[in-house]
Image: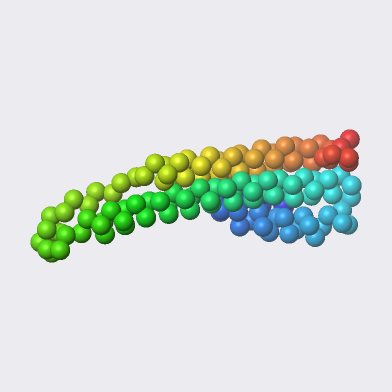
Length: 139
């Protein structure tokens, strides 16, 4: 069940991953060794994906922040005193380089987190179906 929640998490912005990691933390102490190793691996995969998602959020905040600042600053600094001149003013939005870098960082980190979770879920399900664990409990 926790693998399904982890698999769905990139598509709902991580909400189901929080549920999956809570389930893994709660069930890990009383689980059999092979299943406990899967819970440990799910917790590990969650924290790596969480770190990548934090980096993605930071990139998105940089992108949006520079985009809003640059366009708002250019709009306010170029506002004419005459209202009729303001109507004819060219207000084409600009995309600052920092915003582009932030968007690239966001897309890269979020893509890596998505790929990380999906690959870990597929490998985990295959190992669980084969009765094999991770780490010390691997057989």
